[in-house]
Amino acid sequence: MTALLNDANIEVPMICGAMYPCSNPELIAAVSDAGGLGVIQPISMQFVHGHDLRDGIRMMKRMTDKPFGFNAIVEQSSKVYEDRMRKWVDIALEEGVRFFITALGKPTWVVRAVHQAGGVVYHDVTDRRWAEKAKDEGVDGLICVNRRAGGHAGETAPKALFDELAPLGLPLVCAGGVGDENDFRAMLDLGYAGVQLGTRFIATDECKAHDDYKRAIVDAKGEDIVLTQKISGVPVAVINTPYVQKVGTEANFVMRRALRHPKLKHYARMYYTAKSIFQLKKASLQGMNYKDYFQAGKSVDGIDQVESVDAILERFRASFEEQAGVAARA
Image 1 (cartoon, rainbow, N blue to C red):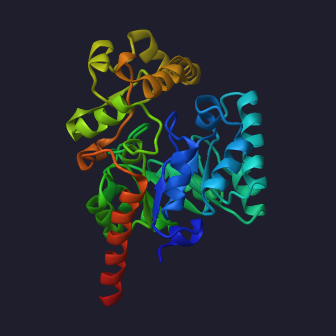
Image 2 (image 1 turned 45 degrees about the horizontal axis):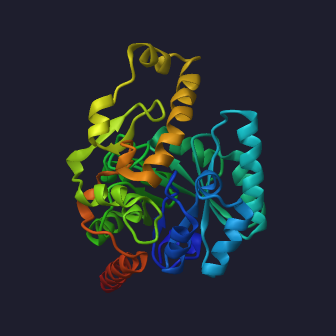
Image 3 (image 1 turned 90 degrees about the vertical axis):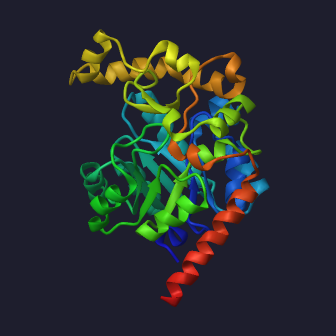
C-alpha cells in the first residue's frame, strides 16, 4: 500500500486533479466511485457548473459513498477571496471531506483546520524551495508538478523532481505527463506514491467539457502543447490552436515589465486572471466556435480516445495490482 492510498482512503493511487473549469461534480464522483480520488474545485463547482458548494457535495454523496478531496487555492489575492475560501473549507470539513490539496500560498490555516478535524493536506509544489516551505507549514504530502503538466506547469522533469524532493521524507504524487497506464506504472516504479491526472479526465464521457475540447486533446501530440503567459501572467500549458497562434503566447512589453516588478507583478497576474477566467469557461463549454484556450499537458501523447472514467480506472487498477505483485515477489 502506498502512503497516498492510506492518506486518501482510496483503492488506486490516482487523483483526478482539480480543474477550472472542467471539474464538474459528475466527473469528480465518477473517479472516486471507480477507486481513485476526485477533487472538488470550488470555483468550478459554483461559478461554472452552478452548484452551491454544500449542495454540490451532497449531490456527489448521492452518486458515491467513496471519499473525495477538496482543492484550496490559498493565494492571498484579496480579503474577500480569502474569506470565501475559508468558508468553503469549513463547509467541506462539515460535509465530511478529509483530504485537501492546497496551492499558491502558505497552507498554514488549512493545515490547522484540517488536522484538527483528523484530515490530511497535500500541497502543490514545483521545486525544493517551495516544498521545504510547505513541509515547515505541516503538510502531509506533496503534489509534485513537473514540466509535462497541464495548467500551471513546473520546470523540472518527473524523475529529477522526485530525486530533488524525496529526501524531504513526505509522500510524493507525480502531477504531469501521465496519460495512460504505462506512464502511471513508470511513475510508481520511480517511487512516487501516486499520480495526479487532469488532461486524461477531460477526455471522458463524464466530463462536461465541450466535445471540441475533448477532440482537441485526443488529436494533440506532446509537441502541440505550448506555454502561454496570457492566461494568468505565468506560463500555462495549452494546446497550440489557431487562436493561440493568432494572439501569441508572450505578454506585451509593458506587461512583461509589470510581471517582473516586485510590487506590480501581483496586480499584473490579477489582470490576466480576471480577463481569462471567462474565456476559459466559454472555451470549455462552447467549444471551438469560441476559438479560445484549451488547457492540456503533454500527457496527450497517451490519450487516443474519449472513454468512460470506469474504463480508465480499470486499466490503471490492473497496472497497479501488477506492479504491487511484482514488488511483493522481489
